[in-house]
Length: 112
Image 1: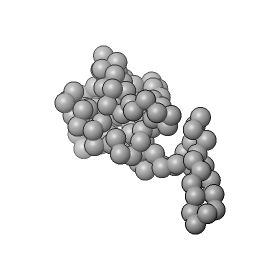
Image 2 (image 1 turned 30 degrees about the vertical axis):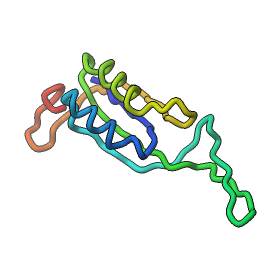
Image 3 (image 1 turned 90 degrees about the horizontal axis):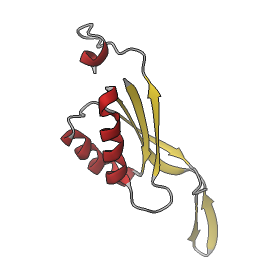
Image 4 (image 1 turned 90 degrees about the vertical axis):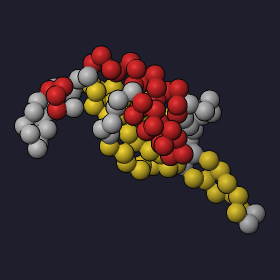
C-alpha cells in the first residue's frame, strides 16, 4: 500500500475529488494548508502600496491506496489538477506498512 499526498490549488478540489470517485477511490482526508514552492508567493497592490503574500492557500489530499492503484490515482490527479501555471502543486508517495480499520479490526487492503 502507498500513501499519496497531493498538494493542489483549492479551486481544483471538487474536480479532483469527483475524478477520484470515478476510479473507485472514495476515502481521503482533506486539509486546508498554506505553503509555497518555486512560486515564492505573489505581489499584490492595495491603494497604491505593493505587498507580498509569500504563503499561499493550498489544499492537501491524503489518500491510501493499494499498490496496483497508485499509477492510476496519480495520473488522474495530475490530469485533473493541472493548469499549466506555476503553483499547480506536488504529489508525494510514501509506503504504508499497515492499515487497520478501527470499527471492524480489518487489516491491510481490506481496511482501505
